[in-house]
Length: 290
Image (cartoon, rainbow, N blue to C red; front, side):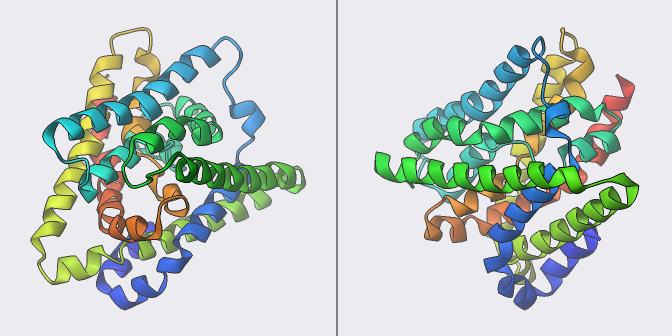
């Protein structure tokens, strides 16, 4: 169904464009359904493992985007939409489907799930430094408002999911939620392809540059993280951490960004879906060899 959504979004640009206003509400719905499906309390890292997972989260969601900002300032590309997109990708929490991608690639999904829960819960705090340094936000008040919107969305959607989970009983309930997640993801993908379809059908060279940047950032981050972690104390969880390093829930920022910036980023976010779907094919072989 997800692949059908991807293809439909490209081949039916008018449908995809009509669904653009649904992107952020559907992302919020996905967050709610994911929290409803997962026992957050059990998925949260235990006391002994928590410092390590916090360190990984700080490195991924603060360290990498700040490093990218410094690099972009150095080459004079901080004002480009590709630069803003790259920073926001690195600042985002792991995508909700990262445990599933880890399974498909042959890794243990548990570390990905723990990092997903922790990274999403603390995202309103980790983004403050990144938003502060991004020129698209401007004043500190705008930064605070954007972080507050993220906090409200995560608290309401996640809190509602945790509260309603007590009424989710048995395999039938979980299966229904899984079906809802798949359907919501397919609808989101259709809308996210709203800028990709017209660019692809018109042979726009900017689309190919954007796709190359998105793939390079996604796979470069995954491969770099995997080979750095695989021989140390984190070797057992290297596959999961590599996959979450590259696959982030950047679409969640669409509700916090200035509207004109969010619209300009749709092509980048749409192209970013491609390496996400290719992750099991690209990362599976090295992960299984290890």
